[in-house]
Amino acid sequence: MKKMFLLAIATFLVGLASGSLTSCSKKNDNPPSGSTVVKYELTGNYTGRILVAFTDQNGGTANETVSLPWSKELTVQNSIIAVGFGGQTSAPNYGASGQTITAKLYIGSQLKQSGTSTADVNGAVTLPNLANPVN
Image 1 (cartoon, one colour):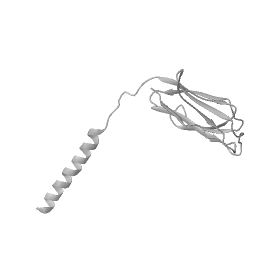
Image 2 (tube, rainbow, N blue to C red):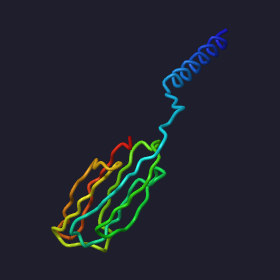
Image 3 (cartoon, one colour):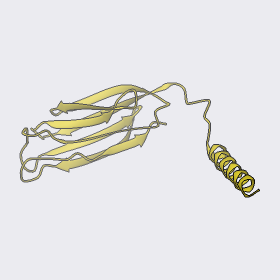
Image 4 (cartoon, one colour):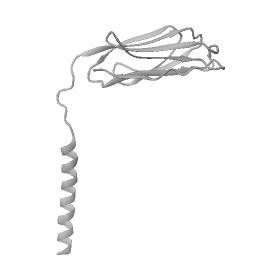
């Protein structure tokens, strides 16, 4: 009798747990359709090279080592929730102390985020991390 009672309690708890987990899930059968143009841009007087990491057209992360000025324009599906980019000096390709980089993130034709960084005494710089929802 005790085993039957414990089995009934265990079955009830498993059913309760699985029911509460599935009832909280949100099913999205209709992801957003279409696409959006995203543009990443770096400008300034920084003479070093920058390792840039950015959201690619598939929602993954891509890396490029670049010099200024630099821009990358991608078409992303609207099912991608957000995009972003950032970066830092690509050693040993430092710039000079006090040089600057301005980073800009565009969604469509609208500037959504921007920020400026200044190279330290060693000529190294870390870009501001910019991110924004696609929709």
